[in-house]
Image 1 (spheres, rainbow, N blue to C red):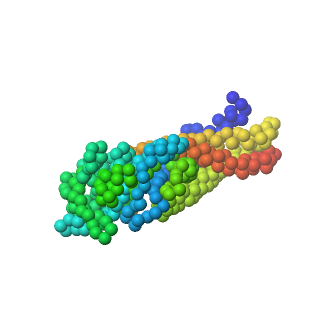
Image 2: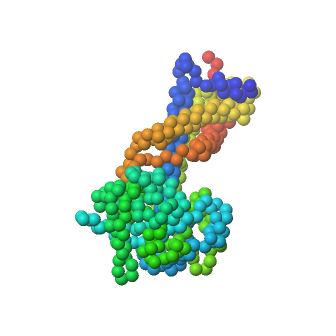
Image 3: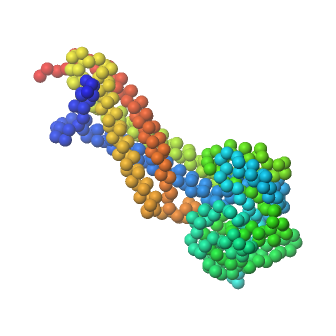
Length: 407
């Protein structure tokens, strides 16, 4: 064991130590750092959870990338795009693409004996990635799209409540077609709920072939392609690569471009994360600076003795930095442990509930990403260690002739 480590270990507070402030102050410093780390980790986990939850819901209704025609027939109907197996193969071969599927959307109106409600009927193809709707299904089952043209539909709990519909009920729907309308009788197969009112208010999910028949399209005409990617962080890069494969008459739109207001709000949350991290790092730095300064003042006589015995300023500074680094490490470990415990409790049992109408989710979401814990821990340690340079510099100003007293 080195000389500096031996002395630093002797400075560590003991259970039966009498007098002085180093012991209690060390505990306060550890508690302050632990509290700061816990708040930072939980803040990032919660805000990242919000971002991931909202992003997944937006993607679930519209995929990461939508390929469609340049021309628009109207607000509630697309210009058809031909299904090109060669184009599908080229898109699927793009690095980062996970799945390609087809869809078509048509505006309509559901009428019951008591209510009328406007909807967007979203027709899905066979082989559609149904994991999102399966995860948000609250009653019934998903429409069976693997057989012939299905009359089964999936409606939201919002629409079901407004129209007083239940699983198994018939739903009379009217669709605009040129200057007239067409009606269809659908059967409610299931009810979903995403708590994202912007989508739950209007989307009814069913068979793509229903839209093709309503629009007089053939089996190779669809409203567009939907592309799911592996990494949302690489969305723009993947979109550029797909755009290079598209013919001149079709284009693409990413989910961030289709929902600018929603993703602008999510980007704003990053500013909140930065502010919280900055404030908590300052609090932790002030706590460790205060603790080290008081320890230096309390041990000034000991510092004078060490200098009189031949210890240089660098060795004495190292003693106190070793002591402070142990306090920092203890605070970070305790803070991470508390944050992990609270995050697991919230993630598993949803202790903290939210108003779905205000927050688009029923409980506080948690992103238990280990890199959040690692990043916050390393950042806190770096800030606190950098903050130690100020009190450590004071050691060089201590004069052993003044501080050493002979009783």
